[in-house]
Length: 373
Image (cartoon, rainbow, N blue to C red; front, side, top):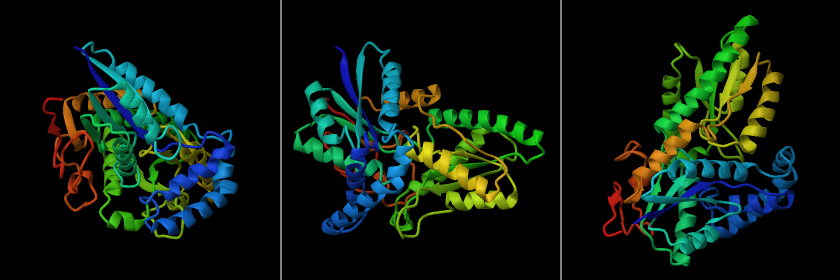
């Protein structure tokens, strides 16, 4: 008998027209994982920020992309590639769904569709390799609420993170090394130094990290593994963080600071967004256009951007391997057995009590085998 598995790809989402930029931003800033304040205060702030940013920064950025985000289209391409990779096993049928956090298709509508499909198991797979309470945890929380609302109670498994996944690291290393070698040859041909690789991840306020969120540690681990896989002796590289919003102190160094240092050192830069797996406004506009312009203004000798892993074969193969490893397994856990993060990170999925719809498991320390599912 063929087993039916529903795979849910979590992603951020993005506006699909100029008119939806404001409600998308409102949904984003209303998330208590993003603005940690009482609901009324959060509502006021979300309204103000959504109104002002949709008219200014975000509105201008999305205007460069045709007044919409390409994230849904790019995520659909990844879902299609993953489905094709998974469905070569006659004993299991995989249906891959997309679930966006802040714009459609969102959890409420996806849960209803999955319930109608009546799968044997649900595997929740975030397109965030590194775990954060602001991304994976937030998406998971919305899924849980929607599942309870619509009485979707199926054996379920959440892949909380995969910062060292072999496919993800291999795809990243391949993309970086290919562009690095071409850029190095061009730089040296013009009498410049070899480029410095900047691993640019989305930043977070420092207080989220000090509260035990493992995101920064996982981003640094990913960058170290990619660097080792590139196999370029004495590679010049640095990790940095982009996309700062608001007055709080954020983790650093910022990408702006890294560019300034490169200008001071008179070294070209190659930027790789190693915490993003598909192109969207923060890669196509913030890095490709805004940071490029900033680098030129600062005097950085040469600037280039490495594309995200997107549908790179090694990355899709890596995701497929993770999904297959969770068939017949329920609960919350990374792509490997046991805990990824050091014990000091209390907001790690494996470090806090987790009650998961469908898993029937509380205080999960490791994935639990489904009994009778």
